[in-house]
Length: 374
Image (cartoon, rainbow, N blue to C red; front, side, top):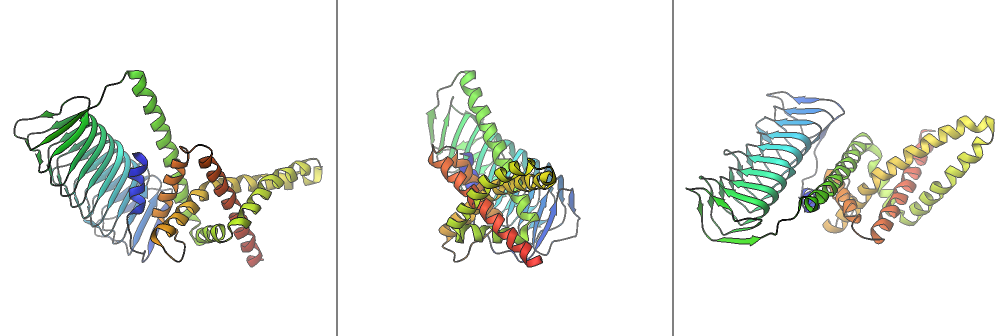
């Protein structure tokens, strides 16, 4: 379910960027009355948006607060604590521990986290998809409500279909469910006096022991942590190396076989050459330097492998003539890499193959760049 949520983040259609503002590894504040001229990318500490963003907003950090008037297009947020008061004209995607939403969203909303609150003033014109520990929905959802979580509390209006999988479900006195309430839970929903709901379709879920509940929680947490680390690394790497990221991907895909061969030869030959170099006193400094570069190359390959996968799959899905590298292709690639962990043998083989492709492509591009500069 978690990967389904994240893949929705990546598959949402976005217009091409007119211009971009990039802030990395520091607190960022967009002052009130200020506005960007295009997309805004902010990665690092705390992000405060008191002004308007005319394009997309992509931010990752510790705390994110959106208090301006509007986000002109889409918003994608990864943080520990997220507060969204700004209206978002198109889609909103959030991955965080604590999520609070009080605004108007033009299209779909997808959230994944520990606890989410949709306050009464919120109006979601599209669907609400949530994968959470607990959620309170007190706003108005014009589309469908689809939730997987521990505890679900609804005290708002749901116009579309309602599908819930949870341990417990409660409807508050202000809840209005226009269509049948379909839910699977360990117990029948608690419906407060005043709630308006028609047909209720209930499927009982058998409760499990604490040990059975605890192990999947640990496993799921590790998956989320791994996903977030790879995603943040890929987004930051692409932001810093934006001028050559496209070339890494293009070379990796267009020179598929050659990139695999280069990557394999580098993976095997460089450590052997470093070992031979350490046997000669004069060559030791060069061997150490080569070892550092080799380590950096491996790290970049791990980061760029999902970027290449995402761009390649996105090109196939959208039937585009050229390869595209942006945040949504990166998110798609990271999600696909996460899914590969669940495919025995083939998944691991595919993952290592793309690491070799990335390694070979990075070597080729950087070598060409060195020759150009020289």
